[in-house]
Amino acid sequence: RLGVQRAALWAMAARGDELARLVSAPWRGNPYPVYERLREGAGVHRSSTGLTVVASHELCSKVLRDRTFGVRTADGVEPPPFAASGLPGGVPVIPSFLELDPPDHTRLRALARPAFSPAKIAGYRHDVGGVASKLMVPLLFDDDFDLMAQFAAPLPIAVISSLLGVPDVDAAVFARYGRVLGASLDGVKSVWHALLVRRANRELRGLFTRLIAERRANPGRDVISTLAASAELTELELATTCELLLLAGFETTTNLIGNAVWTFARNPDQWDRLRADDALLGPAVDEVLRYEAPVQMTARFAHEDTEIAGVPVAKDGMVIVLVGAAGRDPAAFDRPDEFDIGRTGQNDHLAFSSGAHYCLGAPLARLEAEVALRMLSAHFPTLNVVGTPRWRPTTVIRGLRSLRLHH
Ligand code: HEM
Image (cartoon, rainbow, N blue to C red):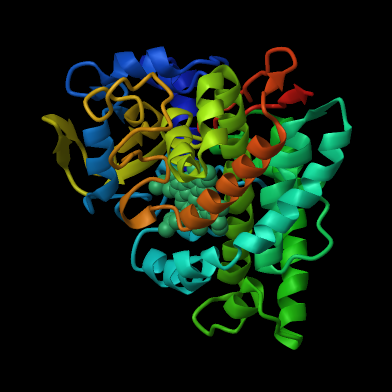
């Protein structure tokens, strides 16, 4: 279910598609030289097997906003080779609204939107600060700690769980589900991974089915209760929407916090600047999103025969949109490979996508990252990283396996 487009990409790479191999090589810790090559010329490339990749900021933005492209094929079905790639024996699954085109996308997104409006999210600043402080205390007493496991993952997990109304969360278990399902955005690559995906899906479905029934009987002020009260969602849509909000709500934000700290550790002058000026928190978060986007790429299907910068794309042709490459495009950003939290003007990155699927949780992600950076900068005048952290072996998600700091 998750990431058929990315599964398609991986399958093409396995069949020897040079372009697919380039953009799906998960072992490379540093994708930016590859992106630079892909941005050459007009910023759009076509492989012999029909894969189209856009890498310039202008074309990524254009494809994401253009209604000629959707997240599914024109008839609303996945492309035939992957339509049957579900996991037998799993829970009944339907696509979340991230994976749907209008009209279903419009209807389901509109139901979830009020809970994530900027005004509503601004009201959570105090609560997010409370969660971050609690997580910070034990770190201050440890000589060294893993920022990912002890702070970057549990913070967004606690926040989104509380918003949704998921009680008694085991952050380590949720973080594992997040990693397993996040990795499946690249396609399910082994039987072992398939089993882990199935188990994570099953357990999350069990959890939400139980919580939805509970909130129907006893509504609260949480997002599950609000969605459960709507007559516009089927049972399956309701469970799938909750699952999307939970997973999208922490997996990416965890990596934003991790990528931020790692980037600041390598740019101590920028850390000093941030520590000296709270007004730089917001711009710093956007600069991390531009510089090390936690979601590096997405995909679209052409809904009719069309072209991108003169390159023809047939109806139902898949286009990979490299938002991670767009963030380093010299045509859009001065000194793109420099991490500079003082960029003046708008930092127009595409890390939250653009157009109809623009990240619903962007205000929440920004808030959490700001709170995290404020707290870390208050307690850690220098960021001393132990060893060299390794990137997770994934292509769509860019994040660290662990990040040990000592003080
Ligand atoms: C969609 C990135 C945090 C909820 C998206 C998309 C991207 C993205 C790139 C669109 C994918 C596409 O166009 O194909 C991120 C990043 C985050 C983050 C980088 C953190 C740094 C969050 C949070 C939530 C969230 C905290 C909270 C619930 C969603 C939802 C969608 C979405 C519901 C689907 C929107 C739609 O299809 O209309 N996100 N996200 N995200 N995100 Fe986020």
